[in-house]
Figure 1 (tube, rainbow, N blue to C red):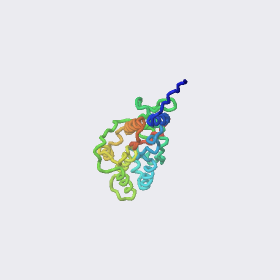
Figure 2 (figure 1 turned 135 degrees about the vertical axis):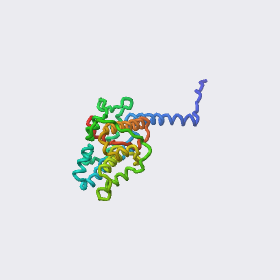
Figure 3 (figure 1 turned 90 degrees about the vertical axis):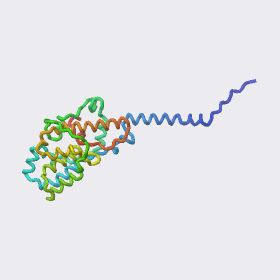
Figure 4 (figure 1 turned 45 degrees about the vertical axis):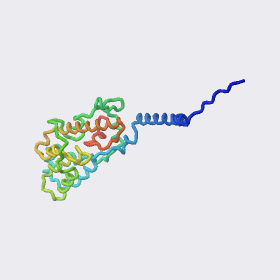
Length: 250
C-alpha cells in the first residue's frame, strides 16, 4: 500500500504571519527609499518656518524712506547699515532652502554640493550684507528677553515714518534690523543682550556683525541637520536664513 504524505495544516497565526511578510518588506523598502531621497512627512519644504522675510523688511523700510533725511542716511552710512534700504525683496523659497540644508555635513561643517565641499564664512557674509568683517565678534545671552518683541520694534520704526516717534531714527532702525532681519526668532522674542547693541549706537559699527551672523546661522543649520538625520519635524529656523539662498559659493 502506498503511504500518503502527511498534510501539514497552517494555523491561523502562521497564515497571518506569512501574509504580513510582504507588507513588512514593502514598508522597509519604502522607508529606505524615503531616506535615500531625503523626503518624508517631516522633512519637506512645508515643514520649514522662518521669521526672516526680506520682502517684509523691505516693505517696512520703503514706508519710512521718504521721511529719512540726507543727514540720517549719512549717519546710517557711517554705521555700515544704509544699504539695507536696497535689500532685494525676495520671497522665501523653502524648496531651495531645504535642498541646501540637506547638503550640510555636520561633522565637517560644510555643504557638499556638486562634489565640492563649501563653507559659509564671515568673509562671504560680509560680502552679502555689505558690512566689514572686522572688530570684536558681539556676544550675548539669549535670555532674558528685553521686554519688547520684534513686532513692537517694527511698529516703533513705522511710527517714525508717520511722525509719531521722537526716538532717534538710527536706534529704531538698528533695533529693527537686529530683531527682524539679522536674528529673528520663532516667538518674536528679542534678548536683552542683543537689544543693548541697538541702544548703544555709537559702538555698533565697532563690532563684527558678519562673523556674528555666520556663527548664529551655523548654529541653526547644525540643529536642523540633526532633525533631518533623525527624520523629525524641522520647525522654525532662526537667524538670517535668506543668506543661504543667495550665497555666491554655490
